[in-house]
Structures are given as structure tokens and as C-alpha cells.
Amino acid sequence: MSSKKSSQKAASQASWTRDQFVVPAVEGKTRFHDFDLPEDVMHAIADLNFQYCSEIQAATLTESLEGKDMIGKAQTGTGKTAAFLISIITDLVDFPLDYKRGKGIPRSLIIAPTRELALQIASDAVETAKYCDLSVVSLVGGMDYEKQRRQLAARPVDILVATPGRLIDFVRSKDVDLGDVEVLVLDEADRMLSMGFIPDVRTIIRHTPRKGDRQTLLYSATFTDDVMNLAQQWTTDAVTIEIAPEKKSTDSVTQQVFLVSRQDKYKLLRNFMQINQLERVIVFGNRRDETRRLAERLQKDGLAAALMSGEIAQQKRVKTLDDFRNGKINILVATDVAGRGIHVDGVSHVINYSLPEDPDDYVHRIGRTGRAGSTGTSISFATEDDAFLLPDIEAEAGVKMECIYPDPNLLEAV
Image 1: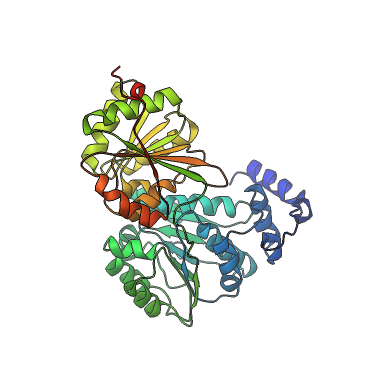
Image 2: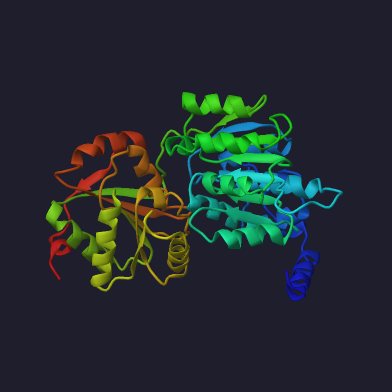
């Protein structure tokens, strides 16, 4: 950090106290004020405008701050990332080491299944630790290996966020030593299972201190037998917290289905976005080739669209997300794997160009809108080919969706 930035940061810290962040007590709600968090952590929380804890935050912070192992069940978008980051950063601030640490030896390790999710967690960690003298490094595949090696060598690492494959590469090259990990977080454990990463995760965990000598926090959207068996292997006397909303889809998202023929789908998509002048929308397809053709066709029609799928190089995916956040593009065409890592505020619409074959993917898709207290809209196209999927999607989402035929003007050729 430059001396100028350092002095600005010091001035900001010196002028701020938690008394400036007034959050009234409300019956039935837990405030971040109600936890004994360090001043620098509270300052960042105030900047992020976090006032009252979400259900998963209220349920897990007390246990994790006490150093207990934990198994948490929560869907995406519930605030679990902030919960474990606040706990980790508080631990690192409250218990500084009294000796000089070597490079590439993290004090905390967060493992996530996808590159997008890992990068998002790392970004959130930087924001939450902005007033603490802590180092955050992310190691993900598809990005410059040497650049990541230089980041590891720059200073001792406090928080390491990684995907399993790339982390193993760094462990095997001895650029990373996991022998001093104090807190281990396994995020989206069920997703890591389904993506076949568990053998890699086992290898990684064998390089960390034994369970009981580290704190382990495991999060999963589902508690399958396989997930619980892994949790038992990797935790000691873990507290189990289950946040299971009655409805998996959110009340903040209006959900609607357009009944449309296969040949009219593209006209409906283009006209709907243009007529409604949508500023930030994510369009989901089921396959890479489908999303690629769709993005190219929208671009050809003069719309500011970009592709987000596994076939896109990681550096380009990061730039595309940045362009989407700052408004350079307003339509993101994504597959489900790429879409799960997209956490962008202000997405007004999610459009399911094709209905997902897995109903759980529908819940994840619509979770990209209606976030952080805002409202959103989900529009699904159902054709003669895939309308049979609707009952299972409705059962998973816990709602009965309105099915309508589009206005004729939405189907006009341009």
C-alpha cells in the first residue's frame, strides 16, 4: 500500500467510531452491533450498510466466533459469505501472531467450487477487511499462474481463497504451505461433490492441521448423506445450523412464464428487452452452443450483449463481469455453471431462454435478481419442447407461476 493511501486509511480509521453507526434495536432482529466485533470490522460493515443480520448470519456468528466447527445449510444469496468472512477476519484481528510469518503460509483457507465464486468471495473479503492490515489472495484456474505466484510472494497471506485444482498445483510446487491454517471454510460442499472435486479437496485437507487443531466451517445448500458423511470426517463436535426456507424462491422476485413457439423465442427475447428498455439483464441458456449463438445474434442486432460460459477464457470472463457491473454491457448471456458465480447488484430481470432441466438450477438462476433488498423479475420461455418441465420447477420453487401468451407486438419481426 502506498504511503498516501496508508495515511488516508489511517485518517479514516481515526475519525470513525462505532457510535456513528446507529442501528436501532428491533424485536426479532439481530444487529451486527450485538456481537463484540473489532472496531475496524464494524467500520467496514458500516460502509457496506449491513445493519441487521440475515437468518444464517444471526444463527452462525455466535458459534463461529467462539471457534466451534460448524455445518451450515443455506441457499445462495442468504448472506453466508459475509457470515464466515466476518468471523475469520475477527479471529485474525483479535489474535495476531507474535512472530514473523513466512510467505505462502495462510492463516485461513476458503475453498470454493467455481472460479467466479472464489473471486467473488475474495472481493468480499477485501471489502470486509478494508480497515484491517490483512492480505487476501485468490488462486483460481484459467488465470495467470505466475501473477498468482508473485501475489503469494509479496507478503504473508492471511486469507487464501481458492478453487481445488489450482490450489493443489501450488501446494505441490511448495509455493503454498497449509500447515498453519487456523480456519478452513468449505463453501458449497454439495456443488463440489456434484462437480467431482472431493478427491482434490481430500488431498488439500490432508495438508492442513488435523481436525480439532483447526476450525472447520462447511456450508452446503443441501444436506445429502454424502455431504453429511464428509462433514463428519472433516469436523469435530460440529454445530449444525439449518436454514431451510419454506419457499426456495424469493418473494422479492416476480415470476412469469411466456408460452411461445420455438421459432418465435428469439423475436420475443429481443423485442421484450428493447420495448422495456432493460438496463441490466441475465439471459440463461442450457448449453454452451446455445448461449454462444444467442449472444452473437443479439450483438448482430446491435444490443450490448456478452457471453459468460465455461468456454470463455477466465481473464475475459472477469472483464465481462466488470463491464456488466459498470454498464458497458447490459445483457449477459450465461450457462448455469458460469451463472452461479454472478453476484451483481441491480439486475432487474432474469430471462430463462430455455427452461433448466434441473429444477434447482431455476432457483439459482432467479437468485441473480431481487438481491440486497431490491425487487426483480424472472421471465421464463416455455415451448412445446420443454413446457413439461414446469410442474417440477414450480414444486422446487414453491410457487405457482403465471403462464401467459405474449402480446402480438412482442412477436413482430424487425
